[in-house]
Length: 314
Image 1 (cartoon, one colour):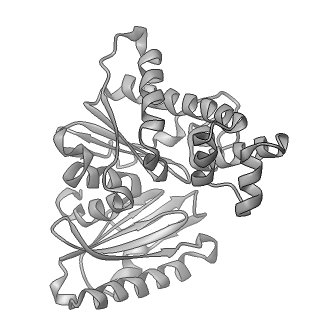
Image 2: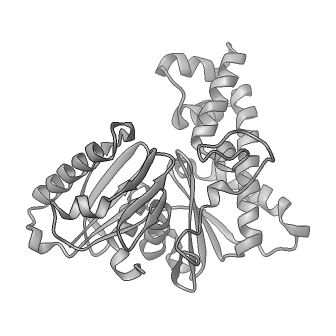
């Protein structure tokens, strides 16, 4: 058995796996502003809880794999920098191993999600695929020739920070105009809030008042009800999604692009217009279109991929 951990900007999921089957899992809030030490302490408590619920002993567990957003030193198990968390030089591996003396592998969370889909999900039928996760930010993971592609020094696949608009919206990374500032769920929620305020009679505004906030789920509730403001929002958002995906098609020409993150739950509502726009935007209309599908493992992709890092670590 092995443990896979997915540390996201909003939640942390810890899972116990036997092969690629999730035996049980627990999800907690991240609260990254509490600071790394407090977050890691909660993660360690959750690991212990998952072990206890599984009826396992520490000796039954081969390793712990962790997926986390940011720039990483994989060999040392250190988070060098994570702009979504505001963390720098966090010795994550050491802090986990002090409590659980097991091999610990650390990888970018989007790479873990891609790896999970590749070994057990939608990507298992392809030997080259790019997974794009749309959530708090935009992340990516690339599989080429059945291997996880990390680039020259392990810092590849930061696709959310492709430049989309020169001198555009300020991104969390400090640069202006990144894809993440336009095509992430955070960007969608921000734009939805502005539209709701501008359109007080809209479904967006009603749902915002009903729920106390707008989020991915109620925004798509408004889209499904053909709310004018929500449909205007969606048209702009899917354009931004397609612009970035098209760049990925041009650069990597993969067999498949897998759309992940919470937004992937919307299925064909997103996929149909996304495919149409990517086909329209591809170079001279001549670039071979990849298969574009949604991820099948949902929120478990990250923990499944993390649990397989022992086979794909540097």
